[in-house]
Image (tube, rainbow, N blue to C red; front, side, top):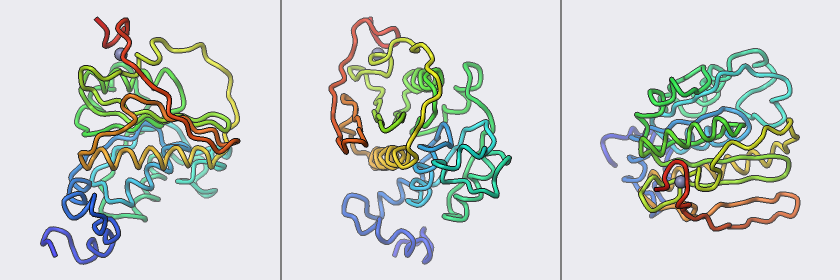
Length: 247
Ligand SMILES: [Zn+2]
């Protein structure tokens, strides 16, 4: 048994370490990783739970909201007793109860053009689980410039989307797909379980990237249609006229 995981950690992570694609080296990679999750809502709840359960060592949680009653049908980090509390504090309690080995860095704020670089720059990987295009573009631009891989998930109604941005020249960036912020649409319903599916997929891609594997979603977009129970891969290409990465 390696000296640098305790007996308890070896038992906790036994089913990870048993996987030949993970092993003790992969478990150490997760422990040594620094990951930021933007948004601790429906997608972020599921993603954060699985990152913490897997043993990701340092997780940043960025969310400037308090828990509201209407969050509880999908944001499974919180329960009825958490109403009115800051989300990051409540998330800290839930995740620490699950895995006390994770160091959680709480950012009780909204990302903006001024603070984003300092908050994201030290991370090996970013997960965007935010709920609006302005934040998604802000996060994607910052990750591209800072050369941080990004796993971006979004959900609306019964639909989910997932993509990975690997900031290597030659790969498409987020703005190749969405050059400008679309006109705001009104609030829409979300099936909570669909947000959970997308958060689980997002965490899975993140954990694979942290093992040093390439993602098949770097040049594809995964779409999930829950009503028809259908997953589709749509090709994403680099846009030579992209406002961020084009000539
Ligand atoms: Zn681009």
